[in-house]
Image (cartoon, rainbow, N blue to C red; front, top):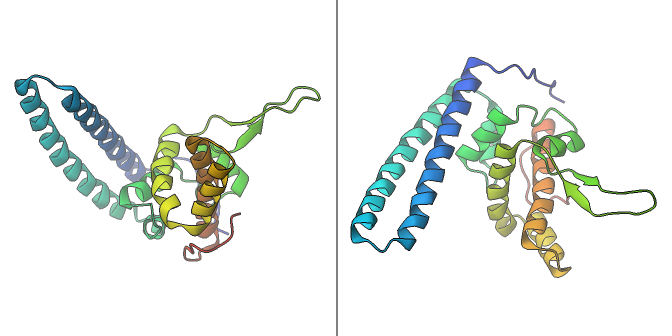
Length: 204
C-alpha cells in the first residue's frame, strides 16, 4: 500500500491547480453564453455571443494543452492510470490527482468522506432519519459527478446499481451520488493495489 502523501502543495501541483481553475472559469463562461444564445432575440447579440463562444473554445483548448504539459511535469503515474478508466478523461484524471492527493493512499471510508459522498446519519433518539452527504471538496465532487454520468452508461457495476436505484423510485441525482461513492472507492482501491481497472468487479 502506498504511503499516505504529505498534504503540502508543491509548486508543480499549485500551478496545475491554477490551470484547472482557469479551465473551470472558461467552461462556466462558455456555458453561460450558450444559455444566453438560446434566449437571444437580437441578431446583434447573437453575433456577439457566437464570437464569445469561438473565443472560449480556443481558450479552453489552449489551457487544456497547458494542463497536459503541466501534468507531465508533475510526473504522477496515477493520472495515466485514471485516464484509462471509461468516463475519466485527461482533465478529470488530472483534477482528481491535483485536488485529491490522498486518492490511492487512504481507506475507502476516508476517500468517500474527503470527496463528500460518504452518507451520514440524521438520527435523533430512537428515530432513524434519512442518510445525507455533506462537506467534502466541491470541485472534486463536481468533476466526479460529470465523470459518473458517463461511467454509468459503460460500467456494468455502476449501470446495474444506477438502474436498481431508479427502479426503486430513487431520484436520478440520488442514484448518481450513490454511484459516485462506488466509483471513487473503486478508483481508490485500484490505485492502492496498483492493479489495472476492471469494469466487471463487484461493487465494494
